[in-house]
Image 1 (cartoon, rainbow, N blue to C red):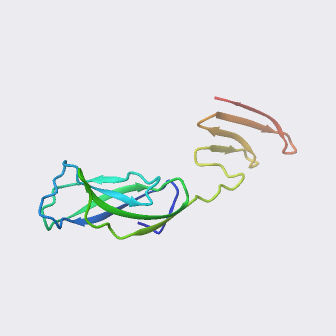
Image 2: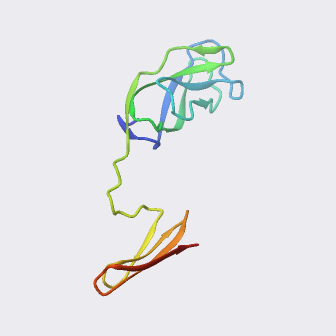
Image 3: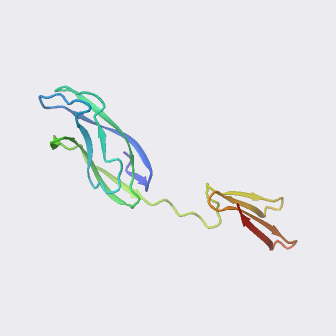
Length: 151
């Protein structure tokens, strides 16, 4: 996991556990790796066992984890769980700093918005999926003469 992650961003990773007991962990019987620590807002919080693991065997749990929308520092660890509860040792702690994305500069069109400019580099049409299009016309001095909006 990276040390820093923007809010809401997904990251892939894996965590490995070794079966130190004397019972085979069977896929489909509730064995899973669960996220423990500062887990508020992280999803998903658990990953199912991908295959059976005999005593002494190891398994990698691959995950795609989405950061919370709240910025701040988070301490994340993984632990094994079955139908009876948590067991075994936790993975090593990973400190992840979740940061807010940088602010959008004033006047910059967002990715979802399409802008069309005329030959004089004046904005003449803005198309937004949520609200439709706005068409604009300018006079010879470059002042907005009129605009019309709609679907």
